[in-house]
Length: 140
Image 1 (spheres, rainbow, N blue to C red):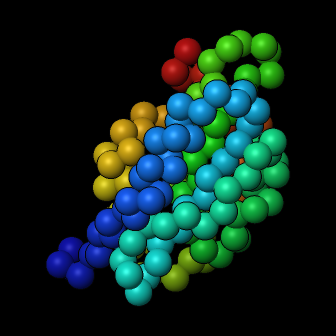
Image 2: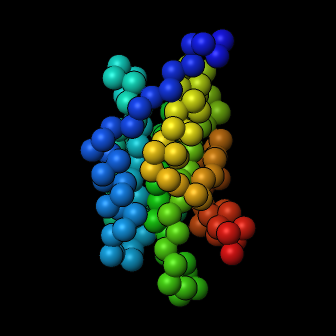
């Protein structure tokens, strides 16, 4: 079965956009949501959002389709770090071939964009500010 696993490339325009996003000066919470273009076997931009809370982000994620949100989060306690979080959203109930394609392409995307804070959720309802703070707490 591993022979049929499709690992998608990352769209070059998306790579540039993610690098710009990583080093942007704005300090508000923001997100880039990525998806896979199955026909082109390419990770592409799905949506881009400014001033977005974790709850808003959760509402933007499809309940039955995987997505890759890349989220810039401002700590509520006033700290000046703005962690970039890569979240692999792979909800229960997705088509198995979709789950495999996204799971197989996740590492390629993480390596291409050099992401360090990588999290996974299986239920979009789990994506809350409390969950995110707890996950980021491990990075101190």
